[in-house]
Each structure stands twice: as C-alpha cells, then as structure tokens.
Image (cartoon, rainbow, N blue to C red; front, side):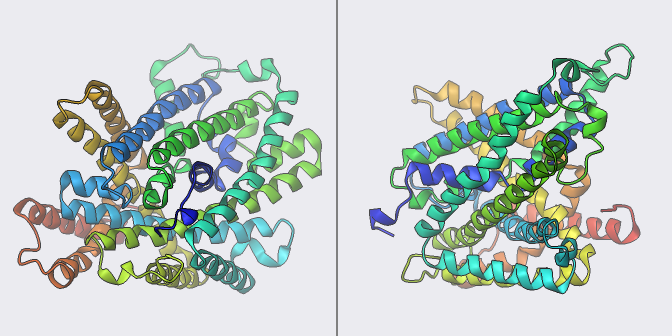
Length: 475
C-alpha cells in the first residue's frame, strides 16, 4: 500500500462518500418525508440536517488534519478521546451495523429485480437467495483485487446511478407547480399555524434523515489509502454538500408535482410512481433501473467498509490480530472473508425467517450513530485542550453543534432501539476480553471506569432482552 499508484485520489474519495450515502433510500425519500409532514416542516428539517451534517463533516475534516496519526476511521477518534474500551465498542458497533446493513441491500436488490423479473418474488425465495449469493461473492472477489480497483469501479457506478436521479430532478422542475407546492404549506388541515405540531412534523423528517445519511464517513474510513491527507476532509465536505443538495431537490420538487396526501400514498419505490405519473410507464422503468444500479453501488461501497473497519482496528490493537492480514494486493483478506461469511449466514436466516434479521437490522442501524457522537465529542475535547490553535474557537463551536446534532440523532432513532443496541455491545465483551488478554497481553482488561461501563451495558442488555421477550418492546 506504499505505492502511490494504488492510493485514492480526491475524485475516488468523493465517489466513496456519495456512493455509500446514496443507496435505495433516495428512491422513496419523497414518500417517507410526506407521510407525516408538510413541505414547510420538510424545509425546516432539511435546514437542520444540512447544518448538523456539515458540522459533522467539518469535524471529520478537522480531526483528520489535526491528528494525521489516526488512520483507522472514525472509531479511532473515540479511542483517542475516551479510551480503548469505548474505541472498541465504536468499531464493534460500526462493523456490525455495516455488514448487517449489507443484507438489506441484498434483499432490496432482489425486490427491485422483481419489477423486471417476477421470478424473484420480492426477494423472498430460493432464486433470490442464489442471485444474492452470486452478487455477494462477485463483489468479494472484486474487492480482493485491491481497494483501488474496487473504488474506481465504485466511482463509475456512482456516476451512472446519478444519471436517472438527475433526470428525475430535471423532469420535476418542468412539471413543478407553485400552487401545488404551497398548498397546506404547514399541513395544518385548515387550522391556524401551531408551532408544537410543526415541531412534531420536523422530528418525523429527522427520523428519515437519520438513516439516509449513513456513510458520510466514507473518506475517513479509507484515510490510510488517500494520496493526500487533506483530500479526506475535502472529500467528506464536498460529498455531503452534493448529497444534501440532491436530497433536497428530489424531496422539495416532488411537493410541487403532487400534493402531500398523494405523495404519502405512493408505492415503493415512490420515485417510480411519481415519474410514471408525469411521463408514463417509461418513468417507472428508468427509476427501477436506477434503483438497481444505486443498490449495487452502495452494496459495493459498504462491502469495502465492512472489511476495512476491523482491519484498521486490528492494526492498532483494537480488534483481534486475525483481522489484520492482507493479501498481495493490500486487501484485508481475513476481514473480508470473515465478514462476508457472516453476511451469507444471515442471508440464509433471512430467507428462512425474517423476524430475527429485522430485529438485528433495526438495532444495528442505531449502533452506527454511536461513533458519530464520540467523534463529535472528541472534537470538543481536542479543541478545548488545543489552547494555542488560532482556529480553536471555530472548531469548538463546530464540535458543540455536531455533538448536539449527533445526540439528537440518537434520540430521534428511538430510545427503545438504543436500549436494544446494548445487546450488540454486550455481545462484544468476550471479543474485547480475548483481545486484551491474548493479543494485547494486558494484565488488566478494564480500567475502573470501563468496568463500570461494561457492567452497565450487561445490565441494560438483560433489561432489553427481558422487554423484548415479554413484549414490552416490539419491533
């Protein structure tokens, strides 16, 4: 990996950010936003999201510039700021979230193919399982050729999948009607404006943005592969700005073509129904082709992420050494194989019984928010202690806003899901104990504070399991 020809340039890093963020969610975004909110509240929600995400992006940019020694992704910020156990949990939760999320891409892809090939039966039969397996291991062998090769192909796929999205935006501009857009702007159903109702609507839009922005850290995860260190932060900021603008245009223009009530009743993917409404059946065909390409691209990006996280963590002693092995192309081979075997096993369980998979997918989706929060909090801590820096005040303000936004995202994701997430973190305890005792040869596994945290996680996990079994929490 010392060969600069195998390093990632700015375009490829931006491709990783955009490619990992824009998956299948954008094709149903207008429906999800309109389900519980009027266009005015959607605009407010996007403004808050744009500010929060940009502050997170600037946080990643600042930390990668200030701490060039931290090349193991966003989890390394948690490790540097709050200790080894917090760092391990961030890496553990992020890794689980990524590879479990890949199963959702498999099922979404098979469901999308059903539009053209009914034999796939919405992704719930043997044919879908076989096809998903072929694609999984096809991506596996592609990544084995090297991160640079995979990222180059990902960049091409990202460009291709943006074509139908841009086509949708152009067509929505031509079909846009201001009177439709301004109709019941705040969704008060003829009643006077109520600030409390508006806040409730804004929160509902934030619940959507929690998950459609997963992947903003793409360039940071591959910081060790960047040709230029400064490109990591630039790629993150540029990628998020581009995605935010695309998301806002796709959502808001839709409100000028159909009323909120109509948007909330669209099928999946909603973009297909909306484009079919404007230009006929070809609109639905174009969108469904775009959806298939988008999911393929996102699946490839997240396959790279899923292999890279334990690999980078293992290199600095925060994951078992087994995951640190590379092949001749510099690809984390053990990490990739182990991760994709888990994906394969869980795909089997999904096609047999989806309830267990749905449970783990729901709680793992919340786990990805934890590293975001710790990265933002580390920005606050580092900036506060960096008293001689000329940009200290700016970075401190950015860190505070990013921290508040990250904590809000965790709350918006649902407190029940956060409680259930403790099951995942408690399950990582044996792996952490093995890591500290066997790989790191530590006499003490935990500090006093870490021991208290581990005990608290186990207690909360037991409570979560009890609530789940007794029906106190339902998925």
